[in-house]
Image 1: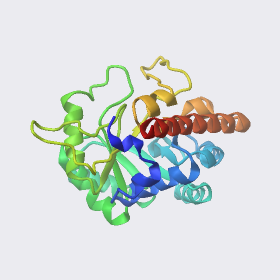
Image 2 (image 1 turned 30 degrees about the vertical axis):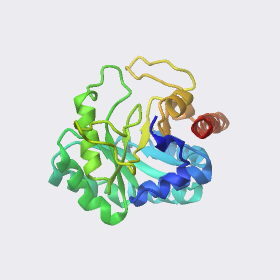
Image 3 (image 1 turned 180 degrees about the horizontal axis):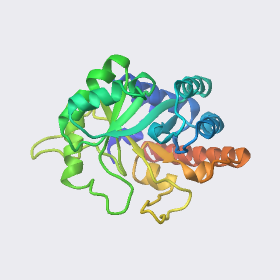
Length: 281
Protein backbone atom coordinates (compact mmCIF):
# COMPACT_ATOMS: atom_id res chain seq x y z
CA UNK A 1 0.00 0.00 0.00
CA UNK A 2 1.17 3.59 -0.51
CA UNK A 3 2.83 5.24 2.55
CA UNK A 4 -0.15 7.57 2.99
CA UNK A 5 -2.13 4.77 4.69
CA UNK A 6 0.37 4.79 7.53
CA UNK A 7 -0.37 8.43 8.39
CA UNK A 8 -3.03 9.52 10.86
CA UNK A 9 -6.00 11.50 9.62
CA UNK A 10 -4.63 14.49 11.52
CA UNK A 11 -1.25 14.21 9.80
CA UNK A 12 -2.95 13.97 6.45
CA UNK A 13 -5.11 17.02 7.16
CA UNK A 14 -1.93 19.11 7.34
CA UNK A 15 -0.97 17.93 3.83
CA UNK A 16 -4.22 19.02 2.15
CA UNK A 17 -4.67 22.47 0.66
CA UNK A 18 -8.42 22.12 0.16
CA UNK A 19 -10.34 23.50 3.19
CA UNK A 20 -13.11 20.87 2.99
CA UNK A 21 -10.56 18.05 2.95
CA UNK A 22 -8.78 19.53 5.95
CA UNK A 23 -12.04 19.97 7.85
CA UNK A 24 -13.16 16.40 7.12
CA UNK A 25 -9.88 14.78 8.18
CA UNK A 26 -9.68 16.95 11.31
CA UNK A 27 -13.25 16.04 12.21
CA UNK A 28 -12.50 12.34 11.74
CA UNK A 29 -9.48 12.59 14.02
CA UNK A 30 -11.33 14.60 16.67
CA UNK A 31 -14.46 12.42 16.76
CA UNK A 32 -12.57 9.16 16.25
CA UNK A 33 -14.99 8.37 13.46
CA UNK A 34 -14.47 7.46 9.81
CA UNK A 35 -18.19 6.85 9.42
CA UNK A 36 -20.34 8.60 6.82
CA UNK A 37 -24.06 7.96 7.15
CA UNK A 38 -26.13 8.15 3.97
CA UNK A 39 -29.56 9.45 4.96
CA UNK A 40 -31.84 8.36 2.14
CA UNK A 41 -35.37 9.01 3.33
CA UNK A 42 -38.05 10.96 1.52
CA UNK A 43 -39.77 12.95 4.29
CA UNK A 44 -38.33 16.03 6.00
CA UNK A 45 -39.28 14.99 9.54
CA UNK A 46 -37.76 11.51 9.15
CA UNK A 47 -34.67 12.93 7.47
CA UNK A 48 -33.95 15.39 10.29
CA UNK A 49 -34.74 12.77 12.92
CA UNK A 50 -32.24 10.30 11.44
CA UNK A 51 -29.56 13.00 11.12
CA UNK A 52 -30.04 13.97 14.76
CA UNK A 53 -29.86 10.33 15.87
CA UNK A 54 -26.71 9.35 13.94
CA UNK A 55 -24.95 12.72 13.92
CA UNK A 56 -22.97 12.17 17.15
CA UNK A 57 -21.33 9.05 15.67
CA UNK A 58 -20.54 10.30 12.16
CA UNK A 59 -17.93 12.62 10.73
CA UNK A 60 -19.94 13.07 7.55
CA UNK A 61 -23.64 12.99 6.65
CA UNK A 62 -24.44 12.16 3.04
CA UNK A 63 -27.64 13.48 1.51
CA UNK A 64 -29.67 13.01 -1.67
CA UNK A 65 -31.56 16.24 -1.32
CA UNK A 66 -33.64 15.74 -4.46
CA UNK A 67 -35.48 12.70 -3.04
CA UNK A 68 -37.09 14.75 -0.26
CA UNK A 69 -40.76 15.22 -1.14
CA UNK A 70 -41.32 18.16 1.22
CA UNK A 71 -38.02 20.00 0.83
CA UNK A 72 -37.97 23.63 1.98
CA UNK A 73 -35.47 26.21 3.19
CA UNK A 74 -36.19 25.34 6.81
CA UNK A 75 -34.86 21.83 6.21
CA UNK A 76 -31.48 23.26 5.17
CA UNK A 77 -31.49 25.62 8.15
CA UNK A 78 -32.06 22.73 10.53
CA UNK A 79 -29.52 20.51 8.76
CA UNK A 80 -26.86 23.19 9.14
CA UNK A 81 -27.73 23.60 12.81
CA UNK A 82 -27.39 19.84 13.34
CA UNK A 83 -24.04 19.93 11.54
CA UNK A 84 -22.77 22.42 14.12
CA UNK A 85 -24.44 20.65 17.06
CA UNK A 86 -22.96 17.23 16.26
CA UNK A 87 -19.77 18.39 14.50
CA UNK A 88 -20.16 16.66 11.15
CA UNK A 89 -19.68 17.83 7.57
CA UNK A 90 -22.38 17.60 4.90
CA UNK A 91 -21.87 15.73 1.64
CA UNK A 92 -24.56 16.14 -1.02
CA UNK A 93 -24.31 13.08 -3.26
CA UNK A 94 -25.42 14.95 -6.38
CA UNK A 95 -23.23 13.12 -8.92
CA UNK A 96 -23.01 16.04 -11.35
CA UNK A 97 -22.47 14.90 -14.94
CA UNK A 98 -22.92 17.70 -17.48
CA UNK A 99 -21.01 20.46 -19.25
CA UNK A 100 -19.27 23.12 -17.18
CA UNK A 101 -21.84 25.90 -17.51
CA UNK A 102 -24.74 23.61 -16.66
CA UNK A 103 -23.13 22.10 -13.56
CA UNK A 104 -22.19 25.59 -12.34
CA UNK A 105 -25.87 26.53 -12.42
CA UNK A 106 -27.01 23.23 -10.91
CA UNK A 107 -24.52 23.67 -8.07
CA UNK A 108 -25.18 27.34 -7.29
CA UNK A 109 -28.78 27.90 -8.25
CA UNK A 110 -32.19 26.31 -8.58
CA UNK A 111 -34.35 25.14 -5.70
CA UNK A 112 -31.60 23.41 -3.73
CA UNK A 113 -28.61 25.81 -4.07
CA UNK A 114 -26.27 22.99 -3.02
CA UNK A 115 -23.08 25.03 -2.84
CA UNK A 116 -24.59 27.26 -0.15
CA UNK A 117 -24.78 24.48 2.44
CA UNK A 118 -22.94 21.31 1.36
CA UNK A 119 -19.26 21.19 2.29
CA UNK A 120 -18.59 18.40 -0.19
CA UNK A 121 -20.22 17.17 -3.38
CA UNK A 122 -19.29 14.77 -6.16
CA UNK A 123 -19.31 14.34 -9.91
CA UNK A 124 -19.03 11.73 -12.62
CA UNK A 125 -15.94 12.38 -14.77
CA UNK A 126 -17.87 11.41 -17.92
CA UNK A 127 -17.95 15.00 -19.33
CA UNK A 128 -14.19 15.35 -18.87
CA UNK A 129 -12.27 18.10 -17.03
CA UNK A 130 -14.95 20.72 -17.75
CA UNK A 131 -17.23 19.24 -15.09
CA UNK A 132 -14.56 19.97 -12.48
CA UNK A 133 -13.87 23.46 -13.84
CA UNK A 134 -17.56 24.35 -13.81
CA UNK A 135 -18.03 23.23 -10.23
CA UNK A 136 -14.77 24.78 -9.03
CA UNK A 137 -15.84 28.24 -10.19
CA UNK A 138 -18.66 28.03 -7.67
CA UNK A 139 -17.17 25.84 -4.98
CA UNK A 140 -13.64 27.11 -4.45
CA UNK A 141 -14.64 30.62 -3.29
CA UNK A 142 -16.91 28.93 -0.71
CA UNK A 143 -14.16 26.58 0.53
CA UNK A 144 -15.97 23.53 -0.83
CA UNK A 145 -14.43 20.27 -2.01
CA UNK A 146 -15.19 17.75 -4.76
CA UNK A 147 -15.02 13.98 -5.02
CA UNK A 148 -14.95 12.14 -8.34
CA UNK A 149 -16.65 8.80 -8.85
CA UNK A 150 -13.76 6.59 -9.90
CA UNK A 151 -15.48 3.30 -9.06
CA UNK A 152 -18.90 2.17 -7.88
CA UNK A 153 -20.03 -0.64 -5.58
CA UNK A 154 -22.82 -2.01 -7.76
CA UNK A 155 -22.54 -5.23 -9.72
CA UNK A 156 -21.71 -4.62 -13.39
CA UNK A 157 -20.63 -0.99 -12.89
CA UNK A 158 -18.91 0.51 -15.94
CA UNK A 159 -16.57 2.70 -13.87
CA UNK A 160 -13.43 0.61 -14.20
CA UNK A 161 -10.24 0.25 -16.20
CA UNK A 162 -9.46 3.17 -18.51
CA UNK A 163 -12.42 5.11 -17.11
CA UNK A 164 -10.96 4.97 -13.60
CA UNK A 165 -7.51 5.91 -14.94
CA UNK A 166 -8.93 9.02 -16.62
CA UNK A 167 -10.89 9.96 -13.49
CA UNK A 168 -7.67 9.98 -11.48
CA UNK A 169 -5.85 12.01 -14.12
CA UNK A 170 -8.60 14.64 -14.03
CA UNK A 171 -8.37 14.78 -10.24
CA UNK A 172 -4.59 14.95 -10.28
CA UNK A 173 -4.76 18.09 -12.43
CA UNK A 174 -7.13 19.85 -9.98
CA UNK A 175 -5.95 18.89 -6.52
CA UNK A 176 -6.92 22.36 -5.29
CA UNK A 177 -10.58 21.33 -5.54
CA UNK A 178 -10.74 17.56 -6.10
CA UNK A 179 -9.45 15.95 -2.92
CA UNK A 180 -10.66 12.39 -3.26
CA UNK A 181 -12.82 9.70 -4.79
CA UNK A 182 -15.76 7.44 -4.39
CA UNK A 183 -13.94 4.17 -4.92
CA UNK A 184 -13.23 0.67 -3.66
CA UNK A 185 -9.46 1.03 -3.29
CA UNK A 186 -6.65 3.58 -3.04
CA UNK A 187 -6.00 5.71 -6.10
CA UNK A 188 -2.44 6.97 -5.61
CA UNK A 189 -0.44 5.92 -8.65
CA UNK A 190 -3.48 4.95 -10.72
CA UNK A 191 -3.57 6.39 -14.26
CA UNK A 192 0.12 7.22 -14.49
CA UNK A 193 1.55 7.40 -17.99
CA UNK A 194 4.75 5.46 -18.86
CA UNK A 195 7.68 7.17 -17.18
CA UNK A 196 5.52 9.08 -14.70
CA UNK A 197 6.06 8.63 -10.97
CA UNK A 198 3.75 9.27 -8.03
CA UNK A 199 4.08 12.67 -6.44
CA UNK A 200 5.18 12.13 -2.85
CA UNK A 201 2.52 14.60 -1.70
CA UNK A 202 -0.33 12.85 -3.52
CA UNK A 203 -2.98 11.99 -0.95
CA UNK A 204 -6.52 11.32 -2.10
CA UNK A 205 -9.25 10.67 0.47
CA UNK A 206 -11.23 7.58 -0.54
CA UNK A 207 -14.86 7.17 0.50
CA UNK A 208 -16.36 3.72 0.02
CA UNK A 209 -20.08 2.91 -0.22
CA UNK A 210 -21.57 -0.54 0.10
CA UNK A 211 -20.32 -1.23 3.63
CA UNK A 212 -22.06 -3.72 5.91
CA UNK A 213 -21.21 -5.68 9.01
CA UNK A 214 -21.31 -8.79 6.83
CA UNK A 215 -20.04 -9.17 3.26
CA UNK A 216 -23.07 -9.84 1.03
CA UNK A 217 -25.28 -8.23 -1.63
CA UNK A 218 -28.86 -7.12 -2.18
CA UNK A 219 -31.51 -7.73 -4.83
CA UNK A 220 -30.67 -4.46 -6.62
CA UNK A 221 -27.02 -5.27 -7.29
CA UNK A 222 -25.38 -3.55 -4.31
CA UNK A 223 -22.32 -5.46 -3.10
CA UNK A 224 -21.33 -5.08 0.54
CA UNK A 225 -17.91 -5.22 2.19
CA UNK A 226 -17.08 -5.08 5.89
CA UNK A 227 -15.38 -2.06 7.52
CA UNK A 228 -12.25 -4.17 7.98
CA UNK A 229 -12.13 -5.09 4.29
CA UNK A 230 -12.60 -1.47 3.26
CA UNK A 231 -10.32 0.36 5.71
CA UNK A 232 -7.62 -2.16 6.62
CA UNK A 233 -7.37 -4.40 3.56
CA UNK A 234 -8.22 -1.93 0.77
CA UNK A 235 -6.75 1.13 2.51
CA UNK A 236 -9.84 3.32 2.03
CA UNK A 237 -10.58 6.13 4.47
CA UNK A 238 -14.33 6.59 5.01
CA UNK A 239 -17.03 3.94 5.24
CA UNK A 240 -20.45 4.92 3.88
CA UNK A 241 -23.42 3.22 5.53
CA UNK A 242 -27.13 3.91 5.16
CA UNK A 243 -29.97 1.42 5.58
CA UNK A 244 -27.76 -0.83 7.69
CA UNK A 245 -28.06 1.73 10.49
CA UNK A 246 -31.58 3.17 10.38
CA UNK A 247 -33.53 0.49 8.48
CA UNK A 248 -35.87 0.69 5.51
CA UNK A 249 -38.96 2.32 7.00
CA UNK A 250 -39.62 5.92 8.03
CA UNK A 251 -40.32 4.75 11.58
CA UNK A 252 -36.77 4.71 12.98
CA UNK A 253 -36.01 2.82 16.20
CA UNK A 254 -33.82 5.37 17.98
CA UNK A 255 -32.06 2.98 20.35
CA UNK A 256 -31.32 0.44 17.60
CA UNK A 257 -30.09 3.11 15.19
CA UNK A 258 -27.80 4.65 17.80
CA UNK A 259 -26.40 1.26 18.73
CA UNK A 260 -25.73 0.36 15.10
CA UNK A 261 -24.17 3.74 14.33
CA UNK A 262 -21.83 3.32 17.29
CA UNK A 263 -21.01 -0.23 16.21
CA UNK A 264 -20.10 0.89 12.69
CA UNK A 265 -18.08 3.77 14.12
CA UNK A 266 -16.15 1.40 16.37
CA UNK A 267 -15.58 -1.16 13.59
CA UNK A 268 -14.34 1.48 11.17
CA UNK A 269 -12.06 3.09 13.73
CA UNK A 270 -10.70 -0.26 14.91
CA UNK A 271 -9.75 -1.13 11.32
CA UNK A 272 -8.06 2.28 10.93
CA UNK A 273 -6.04 1.88 14.15
CA UNK A 274 -4.98 -1.60 13.07
CA UNK A 275 -3.88 -0.16 9.73
CA UNK A 276 -1.72 2.42 11.51
CA UNK A 277 -0.13 -0.24 13.72
CA UNK A 278 0.57 -2.42 10.70
CA UNK A 279 2.44 0.33 8.90
CA UNK A 280 4.40 1.47 11.94
CA UNK A 281 5.63 -2.00 12.85
